[in-house]
Image: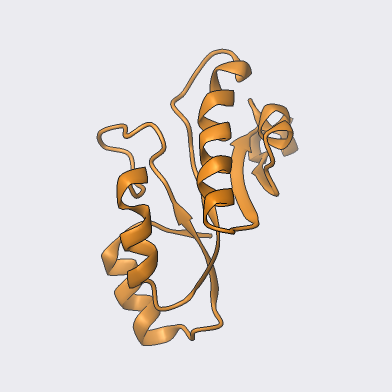
Length: 115
């Protein structure tokens, strides 16, 4: 449900419409090897996007305690608010409660469904 590369933007330019709503995946902690746009590249990436950006998505660094994700979720919320974006996809089974407290509108709780 998110876009994180120029190749994905090219596909959207060919197959999407200006009304297609997307979320941009942000590599909020700038982790090597993890997909997502650097926070520093976000504005330029959004300008290149041929569709309607409605929100941001992130996967914070893996942590043993859910509270460790809070600063990353707060930072993503601040990035979204500064750009007038309303959708925030953040939080998984482990840390979704913290994500919701920080403004998540979409959470991914897959493994909890199978317990």
